[in-house]
Length: 144
Image (cartoon, rainbow, N blue to C red; front, side, top):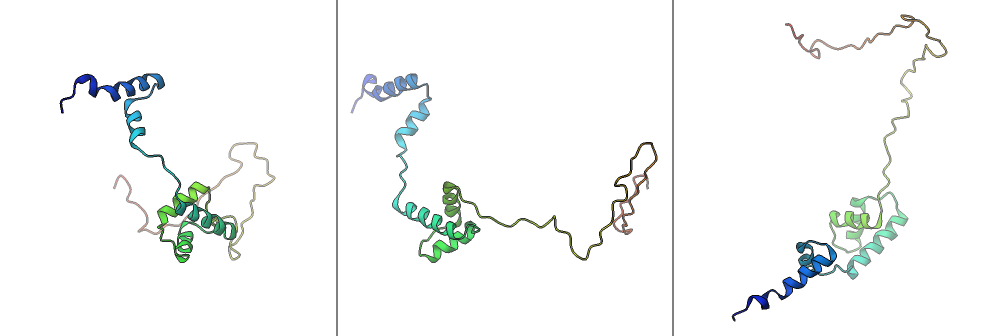
């Protein structure tokens, strides 16, 4: 079939005029024509509902535990998919943080001796560091 240049430039002219009207690039126009619109399928809706119900019962479950729950219910999903679904719903597991503010009961408490003391002149207060290090932990001096 022999095509003339005018016949083959029909869609390109249309997309070029569309490109000028909307101020978009040609690649965006072609990409929108090729890519079908994503529809949320029925299976994904079921998974989202299951995740939402389980998160309401157990808000501390993360993606790993949710994956085990869904696999136990008979849905074959992997952790990455569960992570994406949880992000879509805006869910995140509540993990306990480290207890850095609680002192150990056997540790000795040293009093702060400078509390209430007004430091008003140079050399009034001195401090030192008495950290012990073994000879194997010390680095060699730069001159020797």
